[in-house]
Amino acid sequence: MPKAVLIIDDSTTMRKIVNRSLRQAGLEFDTILEAGDGQAALDILAGEKPDIILSDINMPTMDGLEFLKNKANDPSIKDIPVVMVTTEGGSEDMVAESMNLGASGCVKKPFTPDQVNDVLGPLL
Amino acid sequence: MDFQEKIVEVTREIFETMVMVDVTPGEPLTEHVSRFTCSLTAMVGFAGFKQGNLAIHTPDPVARGLTGDFLGMEVDEINEDVQDAMGELANMLAGSLKPFIADNGEKVELSLPSVVYGEEYTLTVINKADWMIVPFTVSHGDFLVCLELKKQA
Image 1 (tube, rainbow over the protein chains, first blue to last red):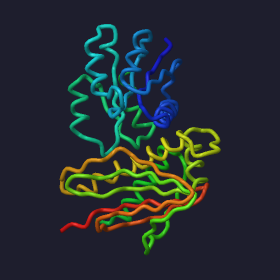
Image 2: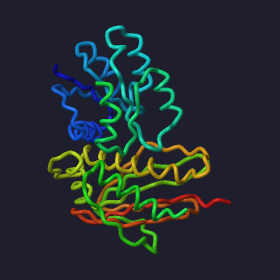
Image 3: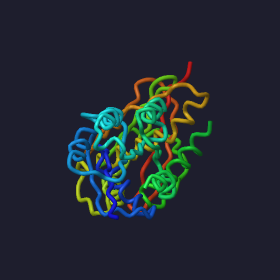
Image 4: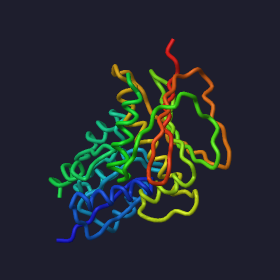
């Protein structure tokens, strides 16, 4: 069955790095969707239903936490697993909050393809 | 805390896992560098129990080359992609060093990355700060990773 992923990050560079890491982890996706913030992601999710979402936390317009809150209130997308992509030294409080809001896991930068596979593999 | 060792360790890890390039560290500089020409500097600040900043200083060709490594394409000028890539690099370096800066569990937060670039600029830390500058070499040339922390009373 074709698989699709949505990558949410305001950094073009990070979206490309995540994309590359997914390939190197052996996680094959037929469709790769990208959004620069949570609101753009919700707009995409109005029409597309990926199998998994990877999301940054700190983003303009709508950050990762607000995205999780909005996603949880939408029956059509609330069950899509979300993995947060965060900086190693990022706020632990925000990581904990994202898990409370329904995130399924967290990958901390810098990450290896194996670390990506360990978190995403079981969710696919 | 041996920041030289930590700077080398985190820089190597980030470059090898995220940028996918080999990086060779040099000996720490004995004199501070604050004036740069035809360069780009990406910085992230630390605030809270410890204050200071982490900066990566790159000549234009190195910034463009590293961005090309990130994105898998040729980069001909310092554009938004270069600023974004170098800002991300500074963000990851600062994030990886943060646990060692707040070494007793004290609260230290990171700022958003800032990027400055141009034909000639000078960066000055206003308050007295301890500093460590480690040079690195990649295929595109040399760059500096600079950690500055406000002197503790």
